Image (cartoon, rainbow, N blue to C red; front, side, top):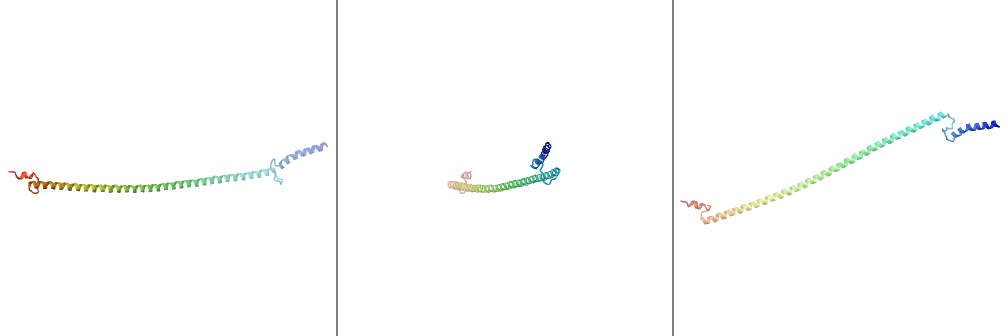
Length: 162
């Protein structure tokens, strides 16, 4: 009986590690009775494939990020060029308006200067006419006094000389 108990205990001890692997506490069994080395090489191959997929996904993500960064940089550049072009057009329009305003002011000043010149010329003509008239009146008054036509008043003294 003792022998039976011992053999039963041995069988139980030997069965214990086998049940542990069946319960999932160790290397997973394929269920086909293959060796643990075959299982570990299969897992290694699976791990290798998984790592390859992860590397490929990481590379794809990095490539996508790079493409996205390029697209965003292009958009920023295009936006900056558009903004620059718009500013340039605004500047050209502003310069054109300023130039037109300057031309208009210049024309107004020129017209005012011409009007001032005409006014002064008219004033000069009027003063010349006034002066001429005064000279004529002063000559005619002197002629009346001296009786000689077109001679200045002091010429009378010269003609009467001995």
